[in-house]
Image (tube, rainbow, N blue to C red; front, side, top):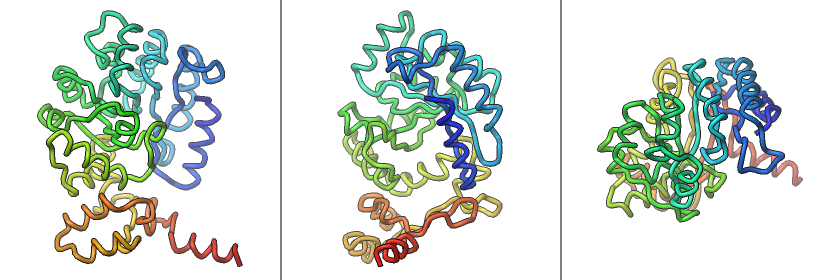
Length: 307
């Protein structure tokens, strides 16, 4: 929420040479006073942060509305003006996660066809716009997502934890709506994309859809990079890419080792990682070709500290 926190976050990200998309949250109503800005201060702070950080090294800025109920019409107009002025910045927010939220939005924004239509009205549906959840969209909403290139960010751990509902992969696919996987840890239960795949697979099965392991890994890597328009730099191991990747250990836990020792295809191996893996399976992490995390190095450091 506070400009200083966004500055601190980008400073640490830059120091680690991470490719990061982030931004200050915009909220000017229906939130605690100490977290509240105004339409003007939110505009000014965001404009300053865009000028300072967007496109600086590997940093990208995202205009970040908490969600429609915590922004006035004036703030949404201001956000739309910034989006129009800075066509290459990202946009992120939440939409249509649960029915009570939708009723609240309808009471605050009269005269709109749908929850998503509010964002559309203020010019906030476009490529590089990412919307969490997208559970209760109708066919026209999905068509607009496809037409504008806005991304549906599926957050299964949040949806299941809150009992909000089930994302419909079949209808999303039929509309050609861009989709990626996300954690939404504010209401979710894990930062791990492997755990996120686990829950996404279950959500899909509950709606009669089979989500293969290959598809889940694609959604979390190349697919995500493509919908964010960053696939020329990240999301693959192609020659010339920035080499952001993790190394997974099939023997990370006894159960994972038992299952992966019996796999015969890549699909089976990836399925085991998705359904049985978590952060313990990440053996190493690389950012821009540099190792920034090693499980064994952390283990040795703890042993040395204990000694």
